[in-house]
Image (cartoon, rainbow, N blue to C red; front, side, top):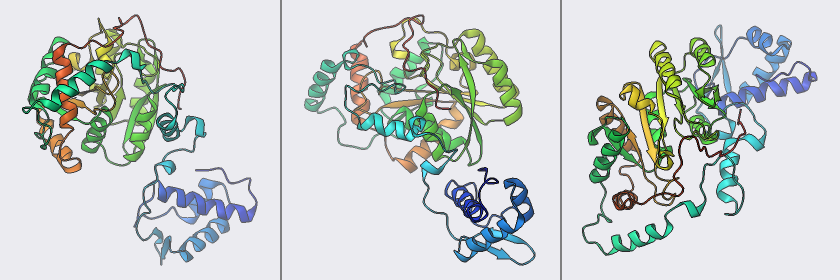
Length: 383
């Protein structure tokens, strides 16, 4: 709620109306919901009751709310189209995640883009990609025209299963779902697990696009401080006890933006807290291809019980051929595939074929880093 007690009387009425309209735009209030009573709203905003009476009367005249005799005021009509810019607290544009994304995508290629995690072109296998695309275009066996399997390219899923197994994550090909990106992977999981109004825990500092995506799911965000070893476990315990979040989203290896790597001790403590507080975790592993001697993953400790492991090749191979994946417990995989079919029908077959070919060739990203060589993408916070 905005502080309007220090405004002039006429301006206070307009401010109350604006507050309610913003709550409608951000889905805090929905059609049919009862508004706080005049007394409750006056106490909440520290204004006189006649200010609320006039604001409610004006909104009723505009058809935004309606009065029911003896019951109070209710939201009427349909919700306006969802505006992500109106969801969540108002922020300075320099740290608004949607503004940052737009500036990053619209900016020139030589522009510095802190926090994006986009790597220099010289690190990526440009020539190998072009050569592989030329070969695929001539291969009659390459599936370049049809919709793919609901789970995605089978051979790539088998390959990912073996690669995850080498890192201690036991996931069969039937537990791996291909997506068009890591962002789509998180979106599908949020559709599967979350309801509007749920609370989600994210890192501070953390990847700003997590916030933009979570806004679209109309959830409440809380931030846990992130250290060189991982999340501040004591702060996390307090946040879990007080806010009871449903989900936690993090990077374990080469955390964006700090470059930190989750320590095994902190990983065990995080998983114990998750068990005690019924918390689910999305582990975003998009930079693991650059790590030579990575720490064990949360999913390797957990066995895909509370952890959903996702990855993407947008950062480490190419952002143009969109390809990511979800590794998840078997009893959830089919339901997430149903959501994928309902929202996108099929994943990017050409992107999957390209990624599979590059991985089979053993294309090496440059440079390969050890976990004590940490890339610092940025050190600013969006909170």
